[in-house]
Amino acid sequence: MSRMPVIFFGHGSPTNALEDNRYTRSWGQIASALKEKPKAILCLSAHWCTRGTAVTAMQKPRTLHDFGGFPKLNKVQYPAPGSPELADKVAGLLDRKVGQDKSWGLDHGSWSVLVHAFPKADIPVVQLSVDVSLTPEQRFAIGEQLTPLRDEGVLIVASGNIVHNLATMEWSKNAQPYPWCTEFNDYIIEAMKKKHTGKILDVESLGLITGRNHPTPDHFWPLQYFIGTRMSGDKLKVFTPQIVFKSLSMASFVFEPQND
Image 1: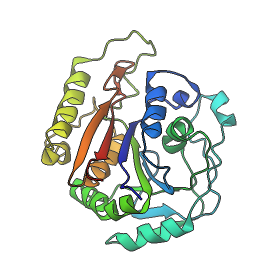
Image 2: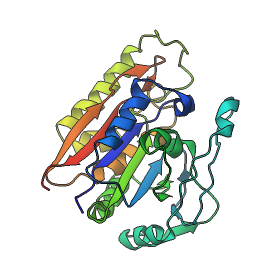
Image 3: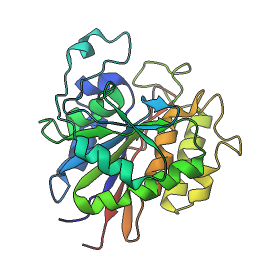
Image 4: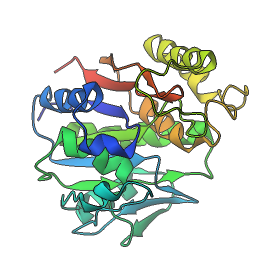
């Protein structure tokens, strides 16, 4: 089987699950470009943050409606099966204790993009939690440790946002981004293109993640895992680098293997 790419989805608003727009269409296009159907999907979502690392290990993960104010979304189900076997494999790859979770399920950071990328929901999905107790370097290292899965038909997906400030958003499609939002978005995209891993891992210590770009850093953390999955021969592709609602980046990335 060919080596799988790795995807970072800028998932944006939960309402994207129901919308047909340039962002949701790009998610479908990214999935359609895969050379082979994944055997399973391992997803890291900004909406499952834990102290310690955990992995969903149930046969039938429930669809979590972990938000408020979107009544239409409460009817959406993403009935993908789970994979306790993949959960065990993930636990065996990591250099730390990994809890086997039987209660979480698939949160909207996962299913709101997967419903467009893989609408049939026929591929097993496992979630790996974002560990709030780790350093950026440790999250990067976990990404590195997960890379063997790419050669076993597992598609690794990270879901977050490069800039995520709900408090400063304006719900207008014509709203122009704040200059500070554009500056940080461009900074990260340029660092991704030039493989400047340190610039991405150091944003917190350098004070570049502020109350403006990320009042809380949870939506940035999945990117730190994602960049750890990059392997020799991977080509970076950037999708939809736009900013919506003044302070929400929709940038998505793919590490696409070139050596198979």
